Image 1 (cartoon, rainbow, N blue to C red):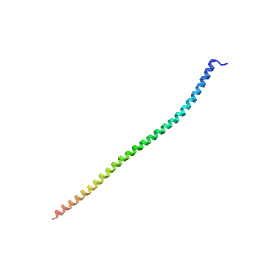
Image 2: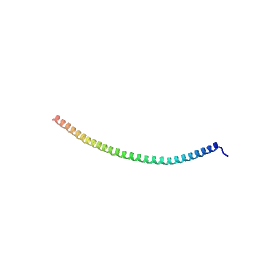
Image 3: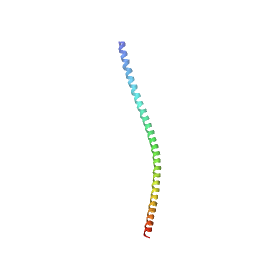
Image 4: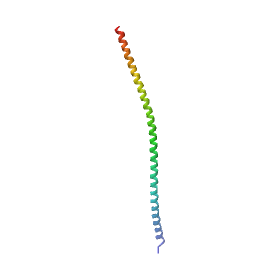
Length: 98
């Protein structure tokens, strides 16, 4: 016959075994939920980054377009100024020779 101490030890081992099995099941389920959570979070992050990239791209296109316009105006102004300077020089040369 068993003594009281032997049955307590058996119950302790059975309890530990069931606890380990329950813990392993919980870990496996938690791993699946964690993977799904991380996957969903990464999709949301990628969508957010794509939206922010599109906004930045649109903003820079506007700045580049304004820059092109400014450079175009400066080139036109530069050509006009150069042309006026050349005409002024011709007039001065023509006035000195008479």
